[in-house]
Image 1 (cartoon, one colour):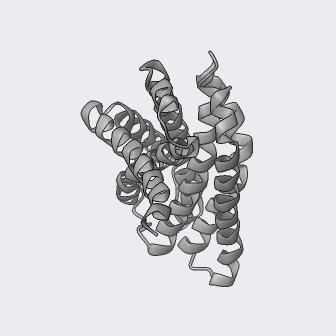
Image 2: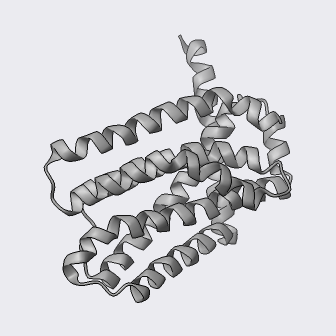
Length: 231
């Protein structure tokens, strides 16, 4: 029995090592989080000053503003995360490591998810203060988590593909945004439902879309990552 569990333990240990490497490296340099945070704050500040809204209309526009912020900040983070690995030669080292290639994917995806959630935890309270609206509610936080998982699941795979090209900064958004439309649409609709206190039977279809998207594209990435990263 111990020998049958050993490969699974080594697999999880490899994933944890990659996540820890990304987090420790970011805590030293603060290059990725600072860029994502500045970009996200600029977006919500621009919307705050550009759109003069009555208090009754803020609930309507809030989901769109939030997910535009998360989408663009997340894309910046995904691009820089893989570019740093490529420029420093770390990606080649990871590929030479005696671990399953899918462990590299899950390690990078969990690291990117941690960065997105850290940005969300900072942005949401600031947004609440600027727009004078309470968005720190459990349902909306659940939508942020599910939407971030789907965004990172696809984004990590596509950034691994785009990082191999010279035009990676331009190519990633071109590849990512058409694929990520279902996540953004479902996240905006579900967020709007929770903010407007709609009944759960109207919100559940959008949550189901998010859950199905997360599961399907995580499985697809698990299957094809080995081929993508080799190209």
